[in-house]
Image: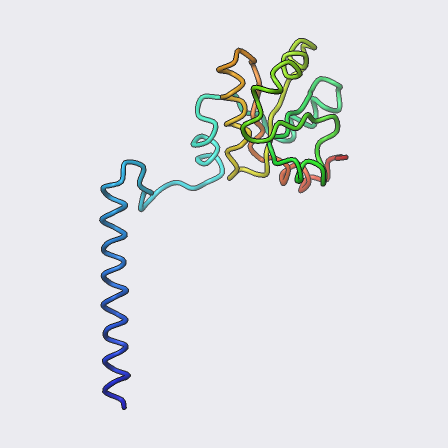
Length: 159
């Protein structure tokens, strides 16, 4: 009986080792492979998502809102937006930017700072929406990397 258990453990070890080797090889040959060592700090993740887009810190965004000088684009899904959002935010769910172009241009025409956000620093949706709107000629729009979570963590108002 012990020999069968020992044999099963050895087989499981070799299967796991083989799976790990296959995974590493696949990751190495894949063009968009995941780096084995990398900087996953909030700043690095922000650079990854936002690239050369202009970003604004959540505290600066709140200051502008408090002065009546900011408008917000919420890039989260409709259900998340309905559950709560920054006051006056316009919801632009993923893939819907082109259909909201007129409303975004009207926001930009006010001269206020337009700021896009999504869930948190790990969420690429805000940057994706800003890039899509930029291609359609609607700019400048800033990205708030801390997103909805950062806003709530600071106790800022929402509706």
